[in-house]
Length: 74
Image 1 (cartoon, rainbow, N blue to C red):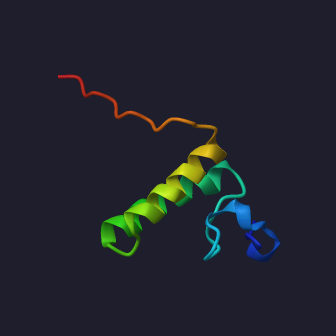
Image 2: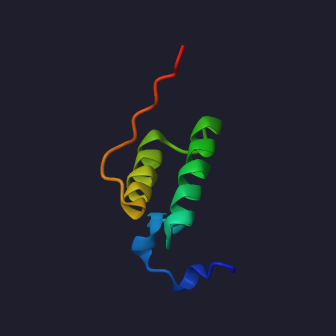
Image 3: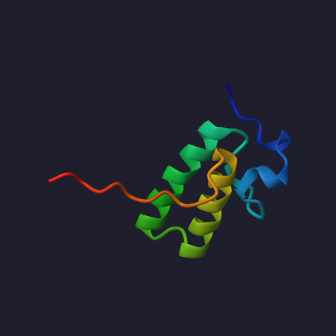
């Protein structure tokens, strides 16, 4: 199903001012986190913008605290 951005509320975007990184549901939120990470690594997204997107995505996903990395077994 195609996403109709015009119908989404401003609050449903990771960066509402630019209306980028839409997050109407959990699938879009998880995808937005991945895309934001890619753009951060490329240098096309600031650290503060990345953190805003991740915080919003975590709220949509129902996560209030950041996930800790799993320790690898040796």
